[in-house]
Image 1 (cartoon, rainbow over the protein chains, first blue to last red):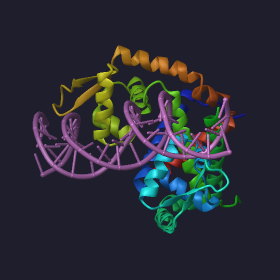
Image 2: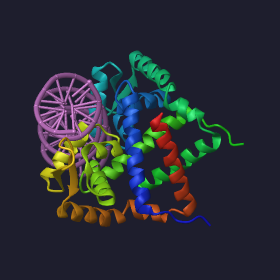
Image 3: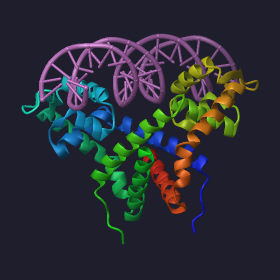
Image 4: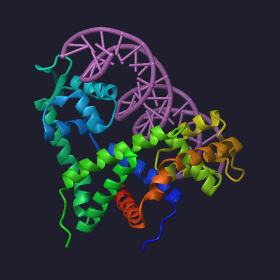
Length: 140
Length: 140
DNA sequence: TATTGTTATACTCTATAACTATA
DNA sequence: TATAGTTATAGAGTATAACAATA
């Protein structure tokens, strides 16, 4: 039976490591993390409403509006009225947004994705399992 | 032999889960995370220089100066000249800083530390192992 | 010259509150 | 009334550049 760890120390270490990792990701990207997240999601899932993007990223709709306004200003996304519901706005990738995403992916190959690929299958599994746990903690 | 996962998807999920977790932690704390980190470190390790705090938290010295200036304004820490090196400033906890830290720890017991304690020993081990991996990724 | 820390400035990221427009 | 989104505002968190003081 595995022994229980000191949860206060584990909590501190969690905060420190996660904080460091976020700063490292930020430094590595060519454009803001929050924007990259939206680009990736639009590419994977297609055009969708602002509220749905906010829910998926688990930020407030107001925060997402701000991110999208910045991105629209940079020509990465386009706002389109939803024909079936006048309250909704659909967000879609522009060609420039897609190019930017692909350039970022190529660049990150030099770091995160490549580093992850360097891990053993067991290590990748450990990381994936830990993400499940982290998500469970976040939901509580 | 464990199969290799899709590293692009794992990278996306890593960003999402970690981002969500950080926002959850931020929302749960009574005062800024960066300040809580400093309070905990000073309590565990005792008074130390600004540069050493910055290195431990892996932020720039300028960022740490800013954090500490805010904290000093709130009476959480005190700047003391290092008697052995006029360039250095030692940071020490004030009684108010210690009280604040202890109050925060009691409050967090209601969430993170308690949630971690609810995990099985194996799950805690998975999380601790993943932190090692995450730290290795951050260092690369 | 090298090291420690600060000031000035700016950007990212997110939140709450109050609002408008549509259903 | 309820829902989708926006505007206004503020605060946390961090960075780079330029600087002063001390070793």
